[in-house]
Image (cartoon, rainbow, N blue to C red; front, side, top):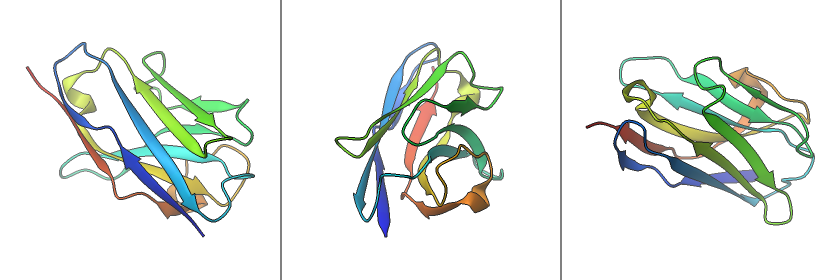
Length: 124
């Protein structure tokens, strides 16, 4: 089974940029869509972005579209989330997830494997 390991979180100011990374270790990275989700304190885990296999199709939550970019490097088994123009409301624990399918999906149930999460805090 594939095990996502996410990293790159930190404390930044509003308007700053940050890039999250996800290393897919273990099982099969190929033929899997990958996604990023986030969970703020007291809130449900929500969809952020997804990229299909092999990487030509992406989809974003309305709240991040135009500011965030998801990408993947299939040779390195890596997925990235470039986050620009960060806002206080982007503060959350961000999770990388590996899907059971090749197609993009916004549904948590379509993702079988999850990273441990990385904290992103946007504050002045």
